[in-house]
Length: 276
Ligand SMILES: Cc1cc2nc3c(=O)[nH]c(=O)nc-3n(C[C@H](O)[C@H](O)[C@H](O)COP(=O)(O)OP(=O)(O)OC[C@H]3O[C@@H](n4cnc5c(N)ncnc54)[C@H](O)[C@@H]3O)c2cc1C
Ligand code: FES
Image (cartoon, rainbow, N blue to C red; front, top):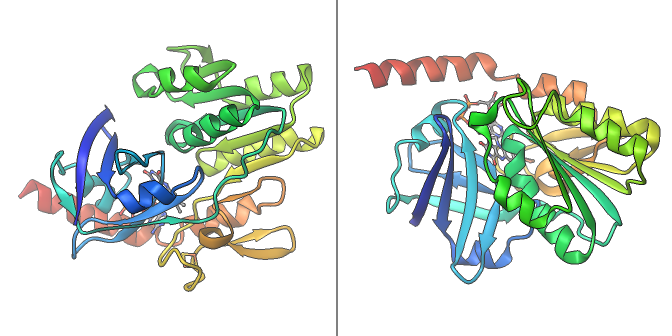
């Protein structure tokens, strides 16, 4: 059993868990993920490691309640225990002194960008972060980002905080005005696709973190397959980081929705159960 040592709510549907898992905390690297299994009746779900502290023996995950399992997770309290957390899984992000790196985080994607930003800054990169949210009430970790960004640009869809618009607007501005050596974009698939399309004409290496539906998380089931150029890759063992200019986003978006009917049914059953 693994203890949840701290919970922080960022919005009515977005929250952070710190979980005591010393072996994972010791081995974790930016870009990797865990598979969480709350109890014997729940689904195993992949979640990105948003932070880790080897001394405290904890890993941090940030969760958006999107369906039955993640909604159930909202009922847990600090001190509760979950059945299992497996990891770290996946390939770590490449951390080198690349020069000037723009890190783009959209919505919940801001959380997995953070450990990559920190590691790149420590490695000597000049870091420019762009983080985007639908509105001011959803913003989290602005302070953490300021600590490791040479420049921080915050955008909101409705203009309630920072610049109004989408993350691709400041991204386009930066790459047309300056020498940018690398872009890392994490967030919803449409946002990562738009970021990769923005940098493609400028030939700037652009990494995205893909999140196809995963089952085992260890390369055996094939559920997480992604077409990358002419190759087929498995996000759980070859990724999640992948070259954004090669990912077939159209296919990924279709495959992401292949269980949508069952996800809706499961959510409806869950809502009925909660109303009783
Ligand atoms: C590598 C990776 C890292 C992720 N990191 C995070 C994270 O840090 N925070 C976070 O909130 N979410 C993250 N996700 C997505 C998260 O796994 C899903 O939101 C979760 O599984 C939804 O389960 P549910 O029962 O609540 O919702 P459901 O109703 O079952 O599904 C809601 C949506 O979540 C996606 N989904 C469902 N099951 C899976 C699955 N087994 N694997 C991947 N996606 C699924 C589908 O797009 C689906 O439409 C990550 C996914 C991957 C693959
Ligand atoms: S989740 Fe099964 S192969 Fe990747």
